Image (cartoon, rainbow, N blue to C red; front, side):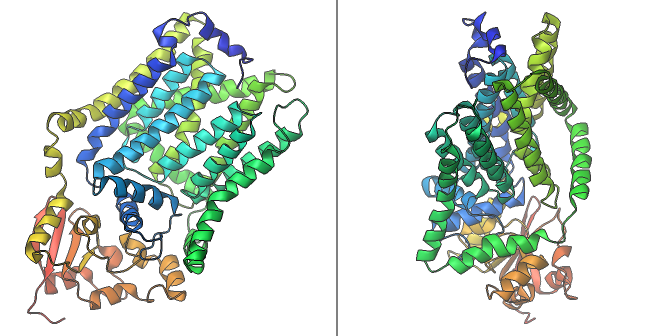
Length: 523
Protein backbone atom coordinates (compact mmCIF):
# COMPACT_ATOMS: atom_id res chain seq x y z
CA UNK A 1 0.00 0.00 0.00
CA UNK A 2 1.32 3.45 -0.80
CA UNK A 3 1.84 6.43 1.47
CA UNK A 4 -1.58 7.84 0.52
CA UNK A 5 -3.11 6.20 3.57
CA UNK A 6 -4.27 9.08 5.72
CA UNK A 7 -3.54 7.14 8.89
CA UNK A 8 0.19 6.99 8.20
CA UNK A 9 0.72 10.58 9.41
CA UNK A 10 0.89 9.30 12.99
CA UNK A 11 4.24 7.68 12.16
CA UNK A 12 5.76 10.94 10.95
CA UNK A 13 5.56 12.82 14.25
CA UNK A 14 7.69 10.34 16.18
CA UNK A 15 9.91 8.65 13.61
CA UNK A 16 12.90 8.58 15.92
CA UNK A 17 11.03 7.06 18.87
CA UNK A 18 11.97 3.43 19.47
CA UNK A 19 8.33 2.39 19.84
CA UNK A 20 7.64 3.68 16.33
CA UNK A 21 10.36 1.61 14.74
CA UNK A 22 9.29 -1.72 13.23
CA UNK A 23 12.46 -3.41 14.47
CA UNK A 24 11.29 -2.80 18.06
CA UNK A 25 8.09 -4.77 17.42
CA UNK A 26 9.93 -7.45 15.47
CA UNK A 27 12.09 -8.05 18.52
CA UNK A 28 9.11 -8.12 20.86
CA UNK A 29 7.12 -10.57 18.74
CA UNK A 30 10.12 -12.89 18.39
CA UNK A 31 10.80 -12.77 22.14
CA UNK A 32 7.15 -13.37 23.00
CA UNK A 33 6.96 -16.21 20.51
CA UNK A 34 9.96 -17.96 22.08
CA UNK A 35 8.59 -17.48 25.59
CA UNK A 36 5.16 -18.81 24.70
CA UNK A 37 6.14 -21.66 22.37
CA UNK A 38 9.47 -23.12 23.48
CA UNK A 39 8.12 -24.72 26.66
CA UNK A 40 5.72 -26.87 24.64
CA UNK A 41 8.61 -29.17 23.74
CA UNK A 42 8.01 -30.76 27.16
CA UNK A 43 4.85 -32.30 25.68
CA UNK A 44 5.77 -35.11 23.34
CA UNK A 45 2.26 -35.30 21.89
CA UNK A 46 -0.04 -32.29 21.99
CA UNK A 47 -2.28 -33.42 19.16
CA UNK A 48 -1.95 -36.85 17.56
CA UNK A 49 -2.41 -35.32 14.11
CA UNK A 50 1.11 -33.96 14.46
CA UNK A 51 2.45 -37.50 14.98
CA UNK A 52 0.72 -38.53 11.75
CA UNK A 53 2.29 -35.65 9.85
CA UNK A 54 5.70 -36.65 11.23
CA UNK A 55 5.27 -40.25 10.07
CA UNK A 56 4.20 -39.09 6.62
CA UNK A 57 7.10 -36.63 6.54
CA UNK A 58 9.57 -39.32 7.55
CA UNK A 59 8.29 -41.46 4.68
CA UNK A 60 8.95 -38.56 2.28
CA UNK A 61 12.42 -38.07 3.80
CA UNK A 62 13.07 -41.76 3.07
CA UNK A 63 12.53 -41.03 -0.63
CA UNK A 64 8.89 -42.02 -1.11
CA UNK A 65 6.11 -39.98 -2.66
CA UNK A 66 3.26 -39.18 -0.28
CA UNK A 67 0.50 -41.82 -0.29
CA UNK A 68 2.53 -44.52 -2.05
CA UNK A 69 3.70 -46.31 1.12
CA UNK A 70 1.58 -44.51 3.72
CA UNK A 71 -1.70 -42.65 3.58
CA UNK A 72 -3.36 -39.75 5.36
CA UNK A 73 -6.28 -37.66 4.21
CA UNK A 74 -4.40 -34.33 4.06
CA UNK A 75 -2.95 -32.84 0.84
CA UNK A 76 0.77 -33.44 0.22
CA UNK A 77 2.58 -30.17 1.04
CA UNK A 78 2.64 -30.63 4.82
CA UNK A 79 4.32 -33.99 4.37
CA UNK A 80 6.83 -32.45 1.97
CA UNK A 81 7.58 -29.61 4.42
CA UNK A 82 8.13 -31.98 7.35
CA UNK A 83 10.01 -34.44 5.15
CA UNK A 84 12.46 -31.66 4.36
CA UNK A 85 12.85 -30.82 8.06
CA UNK A 86 13.47 -34.47 8.94
CA UNK A 87 15.94 -34.88 6.07
CA UNK A 88 17.89 -31.89 7.38
CA UNK A 89 17.70 -32.45 11.16
CA UNK A 90 16.87 -36.13 11.62
CA UNK A 91 14.57 -37.37 14.39
CA UNK A 92 14.24 -34.01 16.09
CA UNK A 93 10.86 -33.18 17.59
CA UNK A 94 12.33 -29.79 18.48
CA UNK A 95 13.03 -29.06 14.80
CA UNK A 96 9.44 -30.02 13.93
CA UNK A 97 8.07 -27.66 16.57
CA UNK A 98 10.42 -24.85 15.58
CA UNK A 99 9.15 -25.15 12.03
CA UNK A 100 5.64 -24.52 13.34
CA UNK A 101 6.91 -21.58 15.38
CA UNK A 102 8.61 -20.17 12.28
CA UNK A 103 5.27 -20.36 10.47
CA UNK A 104 3.57 -18.43 13.28
CA UNK A 105 6.34 -15.84 13.08
CA UNK A 106 5.92 -15.56 9.31
CA UNK A 107 2.16 -15.07 9.69
CA UNK A 108 2.76 -12.48 12.42
CA UNK A 109 5.21 -10.55 10.26
CA UNK A 110 2.73 -10.53 7.38
CA UNK A 111 0.03 -9.34 9.77
CA UNK A 112 2.33 -6.52 10.93
CA UNK A 113 3.12 -5.44 7.37
CA UNK A 114 -0.56 -5.39 6.39
CA UNK A 115 -1.72 -3.71 9.59
CA UNK A 116 1.03 -1.08 9.46
CA UNK A 117 0.02 -0.11 5.92
CA UNK A 118 -3.56 0.41 7.13
CA UNK A 119 -2.89 1.95 10.56
CA UNK A 120 0.47 2.78 12.15
CA UNK A 121 3.49 1.00 13.60
CA UNK A 122 2.23 0.98 17.19
CA UNK A 123 -1.23 -0.36 16.40
CA UNK A 124 0.24 -2.97 14.07
CA UNK A 125 2.78 -4.02 16.68
CA UNK A 126 0.20 -4.35 19.46
CA UNK A 127 -2.14 -6.37 17.24
CA UNK A 128 0.70 -8.69 16.29
CA UNK A 129 1.50 -9.27 19.95
CA UNK A 130 -2.17 -10.15 20.48
CA UNK A 131 -1.83 -12.67 17.66
CA UNK A 132 1.21 -14.28 19.30
CA UNK A 133 -0.59 -14.27 22.66
CA UNK A 134 -3.51 -16.15 21.08
CA UNK A 135 -1.03 -18.66 19.64
CA UNK A 136 0.24 -19.35 23.16
CA UNK A 137 -2.86 -21.47 23.76
CA UNK A 138 -2.52 -25.22 23.38
CA UNK A 139 -4.29 -25.37 20.01
CA UNK A 140 -1.32 -23.59 18.40
CA UNK A 141 1.49 -25.30 20.29
CA UNK A 142 1.87 -28.27 17.95
CA UNK A 143 2.87 -28.11 14.29
CA UNK A 144 -0.46 -28.37 12.49
CA UNK A 145 -1.33 -27.88 8.82
CA UNK A 146 -2.96 -24.56 9.71
CA UNK A 147 0.39 -22.95 10.54
CA UNK A 148 2.23 -23.17 7.20
CA UNK A 149 -1.05 -22.69 5.31
CA UNK A 150 -1.92 -19.40 7.00
CA UNK A 151 1.67 -18.14 6.75
CA UNK A 152 1.57 -18.71 2.99
CA UNK A 153 -1.90 -17.19 2.67
CA UNK A 154 -0.99 -14.06 4.65
CA UNK A 155 2.06 -13.34 2.51
CA UNK A 156 -0.04 -13.91 -0.58
CA UNK A 157 -2.29 -11.14 0.69
CA UNK A 158 0.69 -8.88 1.37
CA UNK A 159 1.79 -9.17 -2.25
CA UNK A 160 -1.74 -8.71 -3.59
CA UNK A 161 -2.58 -5.64 -1.50
CA UNK A 162 0.74 -3.85 -1.23
CA UNK A 163 2.15 -4.50 -4.72
CA UNK A 164 -0.86 -4.09 -7.03
CA UNK A 165 1.20 -2.79 -9.97
CA UNK A 166 3.72 -5.63 -9.97
CA UNK A 167 3.25 -8.70 -12.14
CA UNK A 168 5.98 -10.40 -10.10
CA UNK A 169 3.86 -9.84 -7.01
CA UNK A 170 0.84 -11.34 -8.79
CA UNK A 171 2.94 -14.39 -9.64
CA UNK A 172 4.19 -14.65 -6.06
CA UNK A 173 0.68 -14.33 -4.69
CA UNK A 174 -0.61 -17.07 -6.97
CA UNK A 175 2.27 -19.37 -6.06
CA UNK A 176 1.86 -18.82 -2.31
CA UNK A 177 -1.91 -19.28 -2.21
CA UNK A 178 -1.54 -22.44 -4.29
CA UNK A 179 0.96 -23.88 -1.81
CA UNK A 180 -1.42 -22.91 1.03
CA UNK A 181 -4.23 -24.89 -0.61
CA UNK A 182 -1.90 -27.86 -1.16
CA UNK A 183 -1.31 -27.73 2.60
CA UNK A 184 -4.97 -27.28 3.60
CA UNK A 185 -7.40 -27.98 0.78
CA UNK A 186 -10.32 -26.19 2.48
CA UNK A 187 -8.59 -22.89 1.63
CA UNK A 188 -9.34 -23.35 -2.07
CA UNK A 189 -11.99 -20.56 -2.02
CA UNK A 190 -9.17 -18.12 -1.25
CA UNK A 191 -7.62 -18.71 -4.65
CA UNK A 192 -10.97 -18.08 -6.33
CA UNK A 193 -11.53 -14.89 -4.33
CA UNK A 194 -8.08 -13.54 -5.09
CA UNK A 195 -8.47 -14.43 -8.75
CA UNK A 196 -11.77 -12.53 -8.92
CA UNK A 197 -10.09 -9.60 -7.17
CA UNK A 198 -7.25 -9.53 -9.71
CA UNK A 199 -9.79 -9.68 -12.52
CA UNK A 200 -11.97 -6.85 -11.18
CA UNK A 201 -9.06 -4.64 -10.20
CA UNK A 202 -7.38 -5.15 -13.54
CA UNK A 203 -10.50 -3.88 -15.30
CA UNK A 204 -10.97 -0.86 -13.02
CA UNK A 205 -9.82 2.44 -14.53
CA UNK A 206 -8.59 3.82 -11.21
CA UNK A 207 -6.52 0.74 -10.34
CA UNK A 208 -2.76 0.38 -10.70
CA UNK A 209 -3.15 -3.33 -11.45
CA UNK A 210 -2.32 -4.48 -15.01
CA UNK A 211 -5.05 -6.38 -16.80
CA UNK A 212 -2.68 -9.30 -17.34
CA UNK A 213 -2.18 -9.69 -13.58
CA UNK A 214 -5.05 -12.18 -13.30
CA UNK A 215 -3.45 -14.40 -15.95
CA UNK A 216 -0.07 -14.23 -14.24
CA UNK A 217 -1.72 -15.00 -10.87
CA UNK A 218 -3.56 -18.00 -12.33
CA UNK A 219 -0.53 -19.35 -14.20
CA UNK A 220 1.67 -19.18 -11.09
CA UNK A 221 -1.07 -20.77 -9.00
CA UNK A 222 -1.37 -23.70 -11.39
CA UNK A 223 2.38 -24.37 -11.31
CA UNK A 224 2.65 -26.34 -8.01
CA UNK A 225 -0.25 -28.73 -8.73
CA UNK A 226 1.05 -29.17 -12.28
CA UNK A 227 4.47 -30.16 -10.94
CA UNK A 228 2.90 -32.62 -8.48
CA UNK A 229 0.72 -34.17 -11.19
CA UNK A 230 3.74 -34.47 -13.49
CA UNK A 231 5.84 -36.16 -10.79
CA UNK A 232 3.11 -38.67 -9.95
CA UNK A 233 2.46 -39.27 -13.63
CA UNK A 234 6.15 -39.92 -14.27
CA UNK A 235 6.17 -42.35 -11.33
CA UNK A 236 3.07 -44.13 -12.63
CA UNK A 237 1.08 -43.15 -9.53
CA UNK A 238 -1.37 -40.61 -10.95
CA UNK A 239 -4.38 -42.81 -10.12
CA UNK A 240 -3.17 -43.02 -6.52
CA UNK A 241 -2.80 -39.24 -6.34
CA UNK A 242 -6.39 -38.72 -7.54
CA UNK A 243 -7.64 -41.36 -5.11
CA UNK A 244 -5.75 -39.75 -2.21
CA UNK A 245 -6.40 -36.05 -2.73
CA UNK A 246 -9.78 -36.13 -4.48
CA UNK A 247 -11.79 -39.31 -3.96
CA UNK A 248 -11.10 -39.98 -0.27
CA UNK A 249 -11.42 -36.34 0.91
CA UNK A 250 -14.76 -36.05 -0.92
CA UNK A 251 -16.01 -39.27 0.68
CA UNK A 252 -14.67 -38.15 4.07
CA UNK A 253 -16.50 -34.83 3.83
CA UNK A 254 -19.89 -36.57 3.71
CA UNK A 255 -21.74 -37.30 6.92
CA UNK A 256 -20.07 -34.45 8.80
CA UNK A 257 -21.70 -31.63 10.73
CA UNK A 258 -23.74 -29.03 8.87
CA UNK A 259 -22.33 -25.51 8.63
CA UNK A 260 -24.73 -24.40 11.37
CA UNK A 261 -23.75 -27.33 13.56
CA UNK A 262 -20.08 -26.61 12.98
CA UNK A 263 -20.59 -22.94 13.86
CA UNK A 264 -22.37 -23.87 17.08
CA UNK A 265 -19.57 -26.28 18.00
CA UNK A 266 -16.92 -23.60 17.36
CA UNK A 267 -18.82 -21.07 19.46
CA UNK A 268 -19.12 -23.55 22.33
CA UNK A 269 -15.41 -24.31 22.19
CA UNK A 270 -14.55 -20.62 22.01
CA UNK A 271 -16.60 -19.93 25.14
CA UNK A 272 -14.83 -22.76 26.97
CA UNK A 273 -11.42 -21.53 25.76
CA UNK A 274 -12.30 -18.03 26.98
CA UNK A 275 -12.98 -19.36 30.49
CA UNK A 276 -9.57 -21.06 30.47
CA UNK A 277 -7.57 -18.02 29.26
CA UNK A 278 -9.95 -15.07 29.74
CA UNK A 279 -7.35 -12.30 29.67
CA UNK A 280 -6.06 -13.41 26.27
CA UNK A 281 -9.35 -14.23 24.59
CA UNK A 282 -11.31 -11.25 25.89
CA UNK A 283 -8.55 -8.78 24.98
CA UNK A 284 -8.22 -10.19 21.48
CA UNK A 285 -11.97 -10.44 20.95
CA UNK A 286 -12.63 -6.86 22.06
CA UNK A 287 -9.88 -5.53 19.81
CA UNK A 288 -11.24 -7.52 16.86
CA UNK A 289 -14.83 -6.40 17.43
CA UNK A 290 -13.65 -2.79 17.60
CA UNK A 291 -11.70 -3.25 14.38
CA UNK A 292 -14.59 -4.86 12.53
CA UNK A 293 -16.87 -1.99 13.55
CA UNK A 294 -14.28 0.67 12.69
CA UNK A 295 -13.66 -0.93 9.31
CA UNK A 296 -17.36 -0.98 8.44
CA UNK A 297 -17.71 2.68 9.44
CA UNK A 298 -14.66 3.53 7.33
CA UNK A 299 -16.03 1.71 4.29
CA UNK A 300 -19.42 3.42 4.60
CA UNK A 301 -18.03 6.89 5.20
CA UNK A 302 -15.60 7.03 2.27
CA UNK A 303 -17.09 8.16 -1.04
CA UNK A 304 -15.81 6.57 -4.22
CA UNK A 305 -12.88 4.21 -4.51
CA UNK A 306 -9.96 4.72 -2.12
CA UNK A 307 -7.02 2.55 -1.16
CA UNK A 308 -8.31 2.24 2.39
CA UNK A 309 -11.71 1.08 1.16
CA UNK A 310 -10.13 -1.43 -1.22
CA UNK A 311 -7.95 -2.75 1.59
CA UNK A 312 -10.87 -3.18 3.97
CA UNK A 313 -13.19 -4.70 1.39
CA UNK A 314 -10.62 -7.29 0.33
CA UNK A 315 -9.82 -8.08 3.95
CA UNK A 316 -13.53 -8.59 4.66
CA UNK A 317 -13.96 -10.82 1.62
CA UNK A 318 -10.98 -12.96 2.60
CA UNK A 319 -12.13 -13.21 6.21
CA UNK A 320 -15.62 -14.32 5.20
CA UNK A 321 -14.19 -16.78 2.69
CA UNK A 322 -11.90 -18.35 5.31
CA UNK A 323 -14.78 -18.51 7.77
CA UNK A 324 -16.97 -20.28 5.23
CA UNK A 325 -14.17 -22.71 4.36
CA UNK A 326 -13.68 -23.52 8.05
CA UNK A 327 -17.41 -24.01 8.64
CA UNK A 328 -17.80 -26.19 5.55
CA UNK A 329 -15.25 -28.68 6.92
CA UNK A 330 -17.96 -30.44 8.92
CA UNK A 331 -15.87 -30.64 12.12
CA UNK A 332 -14.87 -28.18 14.83
CA UNK A 333 -11.39 -28.22 16.33
CA UNK A 334 -9.73 -25.33 18.13
CA UNK A 335 -6.60 -25.50 15.95
CA UNK A 336 -8.80 -24.53 12.97
CA UNK A 337 -8.95 -21.04 14.50
CA UNK A 338 -5.35 -20.41 13.45
CA UNK A 339 -6.66 -20.00 9.91
CA UNK A 340 -8.62 -16.97 11.10
CA UNK A 341 -6.56 -15.43 13.89
CA UNK A 342 -3.89 -13.68 11.72
CA UNK A 343 -6.62 -12.12 9.54
CA UNK A 344 -8.58 -11.10 12.63
CA UNK A 345 -5.40 -9.60 14.08
CA UNK A 346 -5.29 -7.12 11.17
CA UNK A 347 -8.79 -6.03 12.16
CA UNK A 348 -7.59 -5.85 15.77
CA UNK A 349 -4.96 -3.34 14.64
CA UNK A 350 -7.70 -1.23 13.04
CA UNK A 351 -9.63 -1.35 16.30
CA UNK A 352 -6.62 -0.44 18.43
CA UNK A 353 -5.76 2.39 16.07
CA UNK A 354 -9.31 3.76 16.13
CA UNK A 355 -9.22 3.74 19.93
CA UNK A 356 -5.71 5.08 20.39
CA UNK A 357 -5.68 7.77 17.71
CA UNK A 358 -8.43 9.91 19.23
CA UNK A 359 -7.03 10.60 22.68
CA UNK A 360 -4.22 9.84 25.08
CA UNK A 361 -6.72 7.90 27.19
CA UNK A 362 -7.62 5.73 24.22
CA UNK A 363 -3.95 5.06 23.58
CA UNK A 364 -3.47 4.00 27.19
CA UNK A 365 -6.50 1.72 27.00
CA UNK A 366 -5.33 0.05 23.78
CA UNK A 367 -1.86 -0.41 25.27
CA UNK A 368 -3.38 -1.83 28.43
CA UNK A 369 -5.49 -4.35 26.52
CA UNK A 370 -2.37 -5.60 24.76
CA UNK A 371 -0.32 -5.70 27.97
CA UNK A 372 -3.00 -7.74 29.76
CA UNK A 373 -3.06 -10.37 26.99
CA UNK A 374 0.73 -10.53 26.69
CA UNK A 375 1.19 -10.82 30.46
CA UNK A 376 -1.38 -13.60 30.65
CA UNK A 377 0.35 -15.50 27.84
CA UNK A 378 3.72 -15.22 29.58
CA UNK A 379 2.26 -16.36 32.90
CA UNK A 380 0.56 -19.31 31.23
CA UNK A 381 3.68 -20.58 29.44
CA UNK A 382 6.57 -19.02 31.34
CA UNK A 383 7.06 -21.79 33.88
CA UNK A 384 7.50 -24.48 31.25
CA UNK A 385 9.94 -22.42 29.19
CA UNK A 386 12.01 -21.71 32.30
CA UNK A 387 12.25 -25.44 32.98
CA UNK A 388 13.31 -26.13 29.40
CA UNK A 389 15.96 -23.39 29.41
CA UNK A 390 17.27 -24.26 32.90
CA UNK A 391 17.51 -28.00 32.30
CA UNK A 392 17.17 -29.07 28.64
CA UNK A 393 18.00 -32.66 29.58
CA UNK A 394 14.83 -32.86 31.68
CA UNK A 395 12.73 -32.60 28.53
CA UNK A 396 13.67 -36.13 27.56
CA UNK A 397 12.23 -37.47 30.83
CA UNK A 398 8.80 -36.18 29.77
CA UNK A 399 8.96 -37.95 26.41
CA UNK A 400 7.44 -41.23 27.52
CA UNK A 401 6.92 -42.62 24.02
CA UNK A 402 10.65 -42.25 23.35
CA UNK A 403 11.48 -44.04 26.62
CA UNK A 404 9.02 -46.82 25.79
CA UNK A 405 10.59 -47.14 22.35
CA UNK A 406 14.00 -47.60 23.91
CA UNK A 407 12.60 -50.33 26.16
CA UNK A 408 11.22 -52.14 23.11
CA UNK A 409 14.59 -51.76 21.39
CA UNK A 410 16.24 -53.43 24.39
CA UNK A 411 13.72 -56.27 24.33
CA UNK A 412 14.13 -56.93 20.62
CA UNK A 413 17.92 -56.41 20.59
CA UNK A 414 17.98 -54.51 17.32
CA UNK A 415 15.37 -56.63 15.56
CA UNK A 416 12.59 -54.62 13.88
CA UNK A 417 9.41 -55.55 15.78
CA UNK A 418 5.83 -55.73 14.57
CA UNK A 419 4.00 -52.97 16.43
CA UNK A 420 0.46 -51.69 16.40
CA UNK A 421 0.17 -48.31 18.07
CA UNK A 422 -3.51 -47.83 18.84
CA UNK A 423 -2.35 -44.57 20.39
CA UNK A 424 1.08 -42.95 20.68
CA UNK A 425 1.94 -43.88 17.10
CA UNK A 426 5.00 -41.63 17.23
CA UNK A 427 6.73 -44.78 18.49
CA UNK A 428 6.95 -45.99 14.88
CA UNK A 429 9.11 -42.95 14.07
CA UNK A 430 11.46 -43.57 16.97
CA UNK A 431 11.91 -47.25 16.13
CA UNK A 432 11.76 -47.03 12.32
CA UNK A 433 9.17 -49.78 12.71
CA UNK A 434 6.77 -50.40 9.83
CA UNK A 435 3.10 -49.58 10.28
CA UNK A 436 0.67 -52.49 10.53
CA UNK A 437 -1.32 -50.88 7.70
CA UNK A 438 -0.50 -48.15 5.18
CA UNK A 439 -3.50 -46.15 6.42
CA UNK A 440 -2.59 -46.53 10.11
CA UNK A 441 -0.47 -43.38 9.93
CA UNK A 442 -3.45 -41.98 11.82
CA UNK A 443 -4.63 -44.75 14.15
CA UNK A 444 -8.37 -44.27 13.71
CA UNK A 445 -8.21 -44.11 9.89
CA UNK A 446 -8.78 -47.87 9.87
CA UNK A 447 -12.28 -47.49 11.33
CA UNK A 448 -13.37 -44.35 9.50
CA UNK A 449 -15.87 -45.80 7.06
CA UNK A 450 -15.47 -43.21 4.25
CA UNK A 451 -11.69 -43.70 4.26
CA UNK A 452 -11.55 -47.46 4.58
CA UNK A 453 -14.36 -48.11 2.09
CA UNK A 454 -12.92 -45.81 -0.55
CA UNK A 455 -9.39 -47.13 -0.17
CA UNK A 456 -10.58 -50.74 -0.07
CA UNK A 457 -12.65 -50.27 -3.23
CA UNK A 458 -9.48 -49.08 -4.97
CA UNK A 459 -7.53 -52.10 -3.71
CA UNK A 460 -5.25 -50.03 -1.46
CA UNK A 461 -6.17 -52.04 1.67
CA UNK A 462 -8.51 -54.95 2.52
CA UNK A 463 -12.09 -54.06 3.49
CA UNK A 464 -11.71 -55.31 7.08
CA UNK A 465 -8.32 -53.91 7.88
CA UNK A 466 -8.82 -53.99 11.65
CA UNK A 467 -9.33 -57.75 11.76
CA UNK A 468 -6.48 -58.31 9.32
CA UNK A 469 -4.10 -56.48 11.65
CA UNK A 470 -5.17 -58.55 14.65
CA UNK A 471 -4.89 -61.77 12.67
CA UNK A 472 -1.30 -60.80 11.87
CA UNK A 473 -0.63 -61.08 15.65
CA UNK A 474 1.55 -57.98 16.19
CA UNK A 475 4.22 -58.57 18.81
CA UNK A 476 3.63 -55.24 20.56
CA UNK A 477 0.51 -53.15 21.05
CA UNK A 478 0.81 -49.58 22.30
CA UNK A 479 -2.11 -47.81 23.96
CA UNK A 480 -2.64 -44.83 26.24
CA UNK A 481 -3.94 -45.17 29.77
CA UNK A 482 -5.80 -41.88 29.48
CA UNK A 483 -7.54 -42.61 26.19
CA UNK A 484 -10.27 -45.03 25.22
CA UNK A 485 -9.62 -47.83 22.75
CA UNK A 486 -13.33 -48.40 22.26
CA UNK A 487 -13.11 -46.98 18.73
CA UNK A 488 -11.46 -50.26 17.69
CA UNK A 489 -14.17 -52.46 19.18
CA UNK A 490 -15.84 -53.33 15.89
CA UNK A 491 -17.79 -56.27 14.50
CA UNK A 492 -18.20 -57.74 17.96
CA UNK A 493 -14.44 -57.80 18.55
CA UNK A 494 -13.61 -56.81 22.12
CA UNK A 495 -10.14 -55.28 22.01
CA UNK A 496 -9.68 -54.79 25.80
CA UNK A 497 -10.65 -58.41 26.43
CA UNK A 498 -8.37 -59.60 23.65
CA UNK A 499 -5.44 -57.68 25.10
CA UNK A 500 -5.99 -59.06 28.58
CA UNK A 501 -6.13 -62.61 27.20
CA UNK A 502 -3.29 -62.67 24.71
CA UNK A 503 -0.94 -59.89 25.83
CA UNK A 504 0.87 -58.84 28.97
CA UNK A 505 1.85 -55.34 30.02
CA UNK A 506 5.55 -54.97 29.31
CA UNK A 507 6.13 -51.39 30.39
CA UNK A 508 4.23 -48.27 31.33
CA UNK A 509 5.88 -44.86 31.02
CA UNK A 510 3.50 -42.16 32.13
CA UNK A 511 0.30 -42.95 30.28
CA UNK A 512 2.12 -44.88 27.53
CA UNK A 513 1.38 -48.59 27.90
CA UNK A 514 3.22 -51.23 25.85
CA UNK A 515 1.76 -54.73 25.69
CA UNK A 516 3.73 -57.72 24.44
CA UNK A 517 2.14 -60.82 22.98
CA UNK A 518 2.39 -63.91 25.16
CA UNK A 519 4.14 -66.61 23.11
CA UNK A 520 2.30 -69.48 24.80
CA UNK A 521 -1.10 -68.39 23.46
CA UNK A 522 -2.18 -69.24 19.99
CA UNK A 523 -5.25 -67.01 19.59
